[in-house]
Length: 376
Image (cartoon, rainbow, N blue to C red; front, side, top):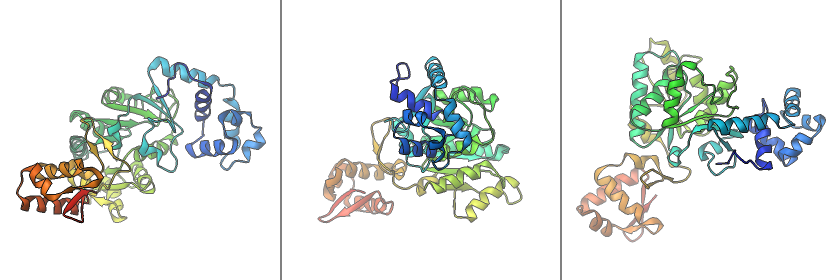
C-alpha cells in the first residue's frame, strides 16, 4: 500500500489525475496511453486533450481545474489524518479480481483493509425495499458463504445489501462494502454504525474522494466495483428496474457468475430474479448451489490458516474427500501414486478410488498414467 504521508511526485500526480471529476478508469488509461505520464496530461493544451476519445469539454475543464494539485494535496492530508488508505491501479495490493475487469477504477479509497482471502468473494445484492423473507434469506446466504471461507461484498444500501453485510459479520466472516459516496461520507447516513462494523470486519471502499456526496450516476459505477470484486453475484429480491439487476448485468459482462434466488410469483420483488433466471442466471436455493457453480480461480488464494485454494469447490470438501484431496494437493505438479494416498489416509483402497472418482467429477484432481493422480 502506498504511503500517503510522504508521497513522491509520481504518486502525487497519479492521485491528482485519478481524482479528476468525471474521469473513469477507461479514460484515465486512454490519457496515460496518449501522454505517457500524469504530468504531461496536465501540461497538455485543451485542444490536445479534446482529441482523446471520450474527453469532452467538461473533463477538459476538470483537468485544468486540478492542474495545480491543490485538491490532491488536500485529499492526501485528509486520508493521512483519517486513516484512509489509497490504492492505485497497478499497486501490489490492488484487488486482483477487480484489476481484471474491462474498466477497473484508477484509484480506491479504503477504510479497513483488504486481505488475500478476499480473492474468494461473492456479492449479494438486491432490492432496497426488501421484505422480511428477503432479508432472512440474505442473512442465511451471507452466513453460509463466510462459513465456507468466502468474503461477502455488497453496496451498503438499505434492504438486501445491509442484510448481506450484517449476516456476514454475525457469522464471524469478512465483508466489503462499496459506496457510491466517499468513505468519510457514508450513505445512507443511518448505516454509519453498520459501516463501522464493516471496517472492523473487512473494508469500506470507494473510487471517489473521501468526502464526495452521493449522486444518482455514482451508483451504477459503484455496482461495477461490487461485481468486479467478486467471483459471482447472488441477487435476492429485485423489482423490474432494481439497481441489483445492473450489478448482475455487469457481473455477466465481466465474465463472472450470476445467481438468482426465486420467489413467489405474485410478489413484485421476485420479478427481477425470475427475469434473470429466464435469461440464463443460475437458480440457487442454498449456498451449496452457489459453491457448486463457481469455477477455478484466476490464481490460487492463501487463506488465513495458510492453506492454498485453487478452486472454490475445495472449500466444500469434508471427511474422507478432504483427506484424499489434501494428500494429492501436497504432492504438487508431479502427482502421487494412488497406493501412497491409501497409506497416507489409512482408508481402504476401494474408498480412496471412489473418492478420487468424485474429486475427478468435481474437476479437483486428474488421473495420470502409472496409477498416479494430481491436483487439477
